[in-house]
Image (cartoon, rainbow, N blue to C red; front, side, top):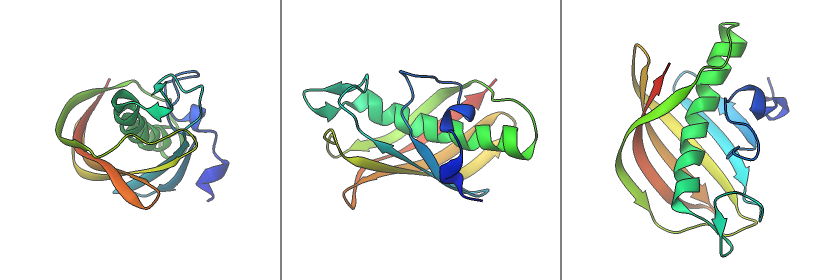
Length: 139
């Protein structure tokens, strides 16, 4: 399956103008990767760069896309709401500029009931610019 053909808005509960991923490019049980082209009209762009909150939301929505794909395409259910339960070891090396392409990857470390723990990283121009551990709770 070509994940690039899936409308990401069918996988996540967020809708424009709050969508912080453009497409899911990879999915398996452990790894999911999304892309985001930073546009000047993005809610989290200020002075030509994507702010920290936008980078964190990009990771959270990558988690949401993974769960949305599982719920809709695999289980035949609907998209469910999720919340950031915790973040740990957040490192933001730099803020990406408008026009940059972000590649965000999550690796599932553990899933227990409705809580998923992931290691996440975001690459821009071949450089890891964000990394963290995130817990997502789904209701």
